[in-house]
Image (cartoon, rainbow, N blue to C red; front, side, top):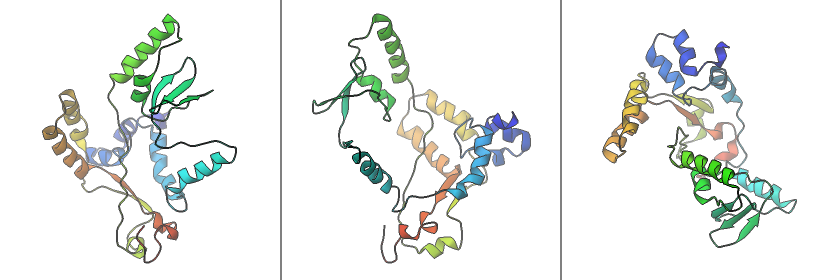
Amino acid sequence: MRMRLPMEQFLGQLLENQSLRDIISQHFFKKTPSFFAMGYFSLHPDYYYPKGGVGSIPKALVQRLAEPGSEVRTKTEVVRVDASHKTLTDSDGRQYTYDKLIWCADLKSLYTNISFDGFAVKQTEAILREQKRILSSRGAESVFTLFPTVELSPEYFSNISEGLFFYTPSRNGLGELYRSELAVLLAGPLDHDGVYPWLKSFCRLNTYEISIPVLTDGSAAPSGRLV
């Protein structure tokens, strides 16, 4: 049961140093279960990277879906969802029918474009309540990924690190910046004068997960080429 505790609470039982607790836990979403967070540090060396980079994943997916005759449409925006009749309408007016809908896009766009036609009164009321809840919600935590290209040889990195590691520029940790100061920031109107100084401090104190795929797949950076 102890390993099911939120990461912050679990570390509080082990470490007295608040900065050290922050440095370890701030890499994860708030209240991440301890068993996942602690296991992550031992699992990440076993990561496998797709040959040719992450861009090869959608290409392989399109190829696989084409084999049974499926079609992948890009640059196609869904502007209406008729859940009662199981149809979608795109921005060009084309309609698509479906048996099961898997919505991987933004939930707010789904509930903004949903049609109430064909539903009973109780069903419509339930959908409206959920729509109100979703549209009034504010996004929680997310992952920001940056893909830099550098003119350095793989040997430069292999001499100082493994293929994936964690880096914290400061030993202080996020501390109250991510607790009380964040609560104050979110309680009021968000503007550049308030957000940007906070983000600058956040980037200076945060923990980063850095991946160098070329150290596990040499084809990710062919000699003499920038990729």
